[in-house]
Length: 498
Image (cartoon, rainbow, N blue to C red; front, top):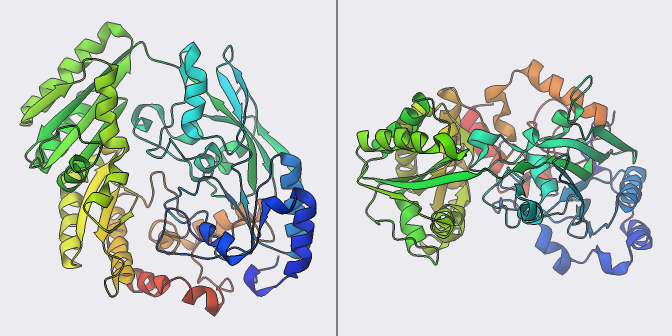
């Protein structure tokens, strides 16, 4: 096995460029700095790295040719969808070739009888539901970026969304995959029936963040749209009361389809934007709650939820009377991230998981940590399953801003782990959290996972320098890459005391 960082191996760029052009045509191979700068980062904008090439395949056969070329010259390659990853998953840390899948964007088949759809990786998440809804079906995983994020990226990061509380994350809805491994071989994993025989290779591939290979076709499960939906908004003067409501609803045996929380700073951002819904700006928190299912019984569920809401001192309750009102309530939640620009020059979105019972404690600690670093915090998250999304509000032009933000982010992740939580609920590990993996996993755990990766990716060409801590044994990155990461690794080491 070649353990040297790929970036140290070198390759003849002019020669590789000619080969790529012969596969795709000159128009679909980007190589100049002004073209490549668009692809230097994804949603994790604090870190950047230019690729050597960006290519736009249209089919599995072209992907195979590109991957085989990369293998011939020992060039790293990184799959990229819409670039909405918030953990740096699509950043080409060691340069190489970025395969951009915007041209592989076809829904190949919708099989209503068997309740499935077969799609290419560049299909936008929301487009699957839009295509299936004419017969009252939909695709359940709904990340906040669903209007732009692609199914391939959702598979790579095991994306979730507000409705995962009841319906699960991406891995619960992927039945089969067509994948191209780093040796250029094409494999079919899983079946349209969705029943794994032997090892669950589909489950292993989903969430592997492009480190196993490239997904070129996905078979997803479609669900029949529930006949009845109730959506409500509860306004609170206390974060503690809002979090008690979350635990109280679950304790009553009701599992909502979605149970989201928005804090005061986020409310103010939303109400200052085009997505304003009239939420009181002085409210400390709001809960957005949705239940669905058969019409029979849904009213009883709503009554139980309303009882918990009132018991915990909600100052206002709104129940959507129709689909228009429901969409308006959801617009506030779905567009919260875009609204932060109204109250902050920059923001950094985090992702951690904690037990629901720890919500009041951790939210207070996050706020305290922010003040200690001189930074404002905002929160919008999946309260029902404890999947936090702390938002660090900052100004990139302030001296030391990046280092301060990263240090704060590290402390927040530490606290999530210390109270019995996890590093990620849906954004993945990527570049952002790799140095924190040792907080959760032992050396034996990490070694076992790396051994699994080596089965698929023995030359470490597929999305290298992701997920695993980089300063372990012989697997250190060269100085130029460490310097290009804005001293992130130094800050991480100070936080976790490597």
